[in-house]
Image 1: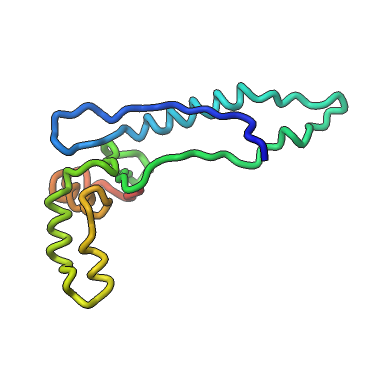
Image 2: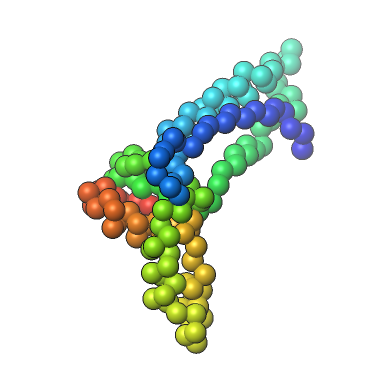
Length: 147
């Protein structure tokens, strides 16, 4: 296929004085997607032919959006973010990561236990534990935890 349009919009990590913290506002992601989609649509010429039949070259068959992994977005029952998203590079959950590693000792013969011995602070599971320990009032309202 042919790329009909391309657009991008950046956003920053939220300012912080806390060592190891890296967070973004999920609303910034939504705003960026809206901005990019408007920019793409306004740049496309979707005028029909004289006989009112739209040319095949204007059929949109896909949209690609890139993001990141190992982030943590905590949502309430209405799918509203309860706090800024903790990003993959956020390492505030270092103690929780170490606790998981020490609890699930790699010397165990169980392959499922061994996989937990490689959990890094940027993974979602230590971030969940961090949230439970450090923000119980928020955690009590969590209905969904998404990446």
